[in-house]
Length: 133
Image 1 (cartoon, one colour):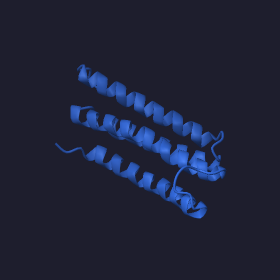
Image 2 (spheres, rainbow, N blue to C red):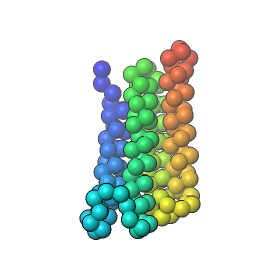
Image 3 (cartoon, rainbow, N blue to C red):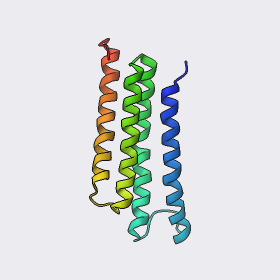
């Protein structure tokens, strides 16, 4: 069985992770710090933006894959995958531009990501219990 929709979103998340990882690596090289962070706020923000993606993306991708495998409507899978990815991009943008503080994009990105994951979880559950989604 192939999972083309999940594959697309896993690829997009991987590219976003690589972008955020390059940012962290540049701070690590600049500060000659292989582990942890120092008192540079932007360095800490870069690490947290990267880590935040790694905390949420696996579960979202698992839910996308389960939904796709179990027959949740492809339109739902695409829409919720897009919502999640947009949320993660907004979150990272808000983290970086707000230097870890309050920022509209960070808040919006978190809300979109959480909503996408909640709707994915509900769609998978409803599908398992044979309620058409």
